[in-house]
Image 1 (cartoon, rainbow over the protein chains, first blue to last red):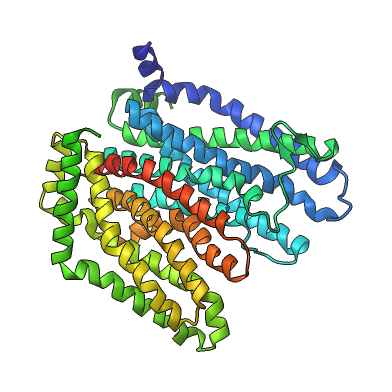
Image 2 (cartoon, rainbow over the protein chains, first blue to last red):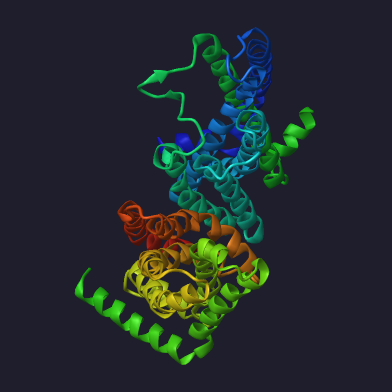
Length: 245
Length: 225
């Protein structure tokens, strides 16, 4: 069992397996994005209060969800690396950081653009915005720590510890709306209670969420493959791959 | 905790406390920094008492946080450089217990003095007496959290040369909840509202930090050394 896992998650197997998946994931991402964007920006009905400006939600909400999701993936693979010292989880954790930071940045920027017409200001010091900003700092700290330590093995372990510590921040983000309710609206969609969003607006959002998930998987594989090639550049299987090109 | 671990804990507290007391700059510099940084704000903002009163809790909390962070650099540094940290990791006692002792000493030599100095700064920033008491309670609950969380960051950066800037990048985001509740408690109290919610949340954060932070610090030190 353990040996099978080791073999399946070896750099060589991951590289070949992800090479086969990558075109499919790319295609699915593209289709989902085109469908979701057309549905959300053109077909979905206009909002009674916010007019057309609410449509940025189709980018903002998936980006904000992904910013949390990627952090959890990063911390989880970091934890797996700490416990079992698997090489692949180390690569995955490192590849997550820049992608997650980008999603966080996107959520902050789209939030600011949305806030201007809706609340009349680019930025408010509301709990959720602040937590999202903190999340961005956590990603930046992770990357800074990782690049500051020269030894690759200890850099990965130190960064993994930091990611797990930062994970404490995730529940604070999630419950912040309920804790210090200020300007930000209460979550419209929650597990258990269902959605208060009308189905005509809800479904395009779900398509966009799926698009973001697949985009993340695609980019994660591409980044991880790059790092794998760089690490194993002197091994035989990489030379074989080169010949096949 | 077994009896020998407790002995090791006591010995470590006594050793670190003595070392820290004899090294005057280690405990005195953060306090001077605290006073100096606080007194820069009126010079920058203007001496208007009403404005100062409004922002005093925030200023005192932010500078206390910075003073705690800057002083943290010394917690593991000297032990790391002379190799005794490595011996402490290899030794027979649970390393987390020794880490607890080191964090406790850091709090005793910076957290407590910062709290005791805060009334003075409250007075020069025109904070009313009620506010000063609330400020002291919030610092009493908050400064141990600063030492505990900060020790994780120091442990991660102890092996890095000139890690000071990086340390602030790692720690400051994690300090934000304490800052919000700490300064918020004083604001809420001055507004005539009930502060127990804020203090209970701070106590909850403190309990969480006491339980988990030393484990992370010990793990991080094992990576760094």
